[in-house]
Length: 150
Image (cartoon, rainbow, N blue to C red; front, side, top):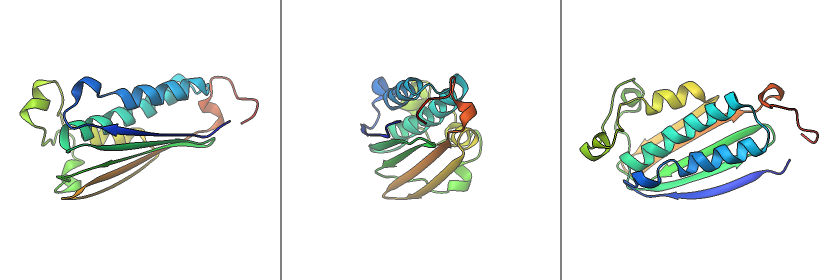
């Protein structure tokens, strides 16, 4: 199957468009014939990461890469960064703004959810910004119907 590479721009506080990256990722995974459970797992991770860029940063990018044996997406944002990654990984910890909270976000479950659904998670942050890379390995059983030319 053909590899897919897509790049997205994510705007700060653009809650109206939050979810676009995860929706488009979902569409491509479904076209590949991947199972509902695999697509759901990836979509949850991508959505949580996308929302984090929207509500916690000054904007950023997402780069999606779908290969035959894995899906990887890298999010890079611009400041302010995560002060303490180990604290941010704790369920319920949040630094969400009042605006995000008023719009139903900021429960402090984003990073823990991403870690729980992904096969690999890389997170690095400084005051200049954050890089999050998540990977999901595709196994034969992750297909609804095994593709002929896998």
